Length: 121
Image (cartoon, rainbow, N blue to C red; front, side, top):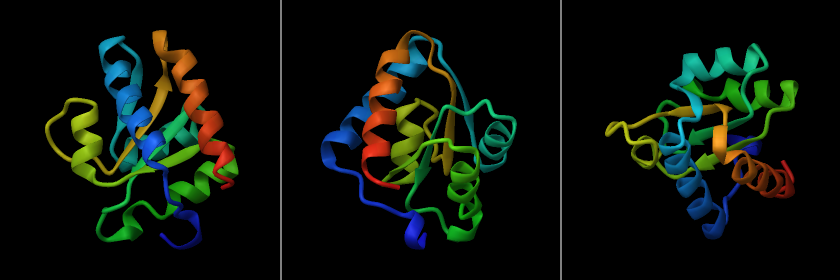
């Protein structure tokens, strides 16, 4: 993942997991998978992108941080695909998730975006 990879503090990891679970419960809209996330970014509908660190081969998602930077979409990392999938309740791993509409979780989305941007991407 090279220079586009950064370490997410434990406090933020916890907040991200809670946000994703809340997003599902409060009927927020999101896209799952590399292709869907790529389309959401290109169409300027993605508000925040989550990427799994353990995607193999890494080339599958290497274009996403570059695309996010180009489109000014904040992105962050989750330790494993399984963690990402479990956070939104799909029971299988997910390489990437894009938040399209936060719904009632808008305030939490804004807090996470601020913290991610403060990590100095």
